[in-house]
Image (cartoon, rainbow, N blue to C red; front, top):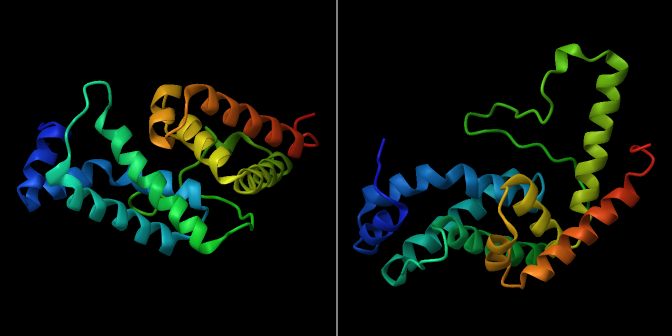
Length: 193
């Protein structure tokens, strides 16, 4: 386990230290991949390519990287990720909704529910249907709302970090999240009764 800080690793990467780069990539690959995956939807090949683009940008930016006292490294990293996702979405102009599943580092499916063994077949089927509807509804949100929701709910970032990543004010983040949740409530009202 490498206990060097992200900032120290970036300093070494700025000097073209490939070992430091590998360490930083291993440390943050799940965060980058998972965030991109949830923002893009289930297009695994594109997510993999996008995650690689993020780390290529990190490598190239390392000589110019200067840590900010009020900003965590992951905020800077997720800003790069967000920019790459938005660029990809603009290229693709995706509007289709698709079910969303994330497979962990070793391909295992991550469950959002604590214990499937306690569910009746009817309850499990309803759960699967609700999950598909929820993920489809999230994918139909405007890009900025989907990004804010992903960063808040999945990555559990605070409003200030989200504002820095998205380059908007904290009040804009709160507004985006309110509209996203309101839209989801409306789109899922039949399931939330």
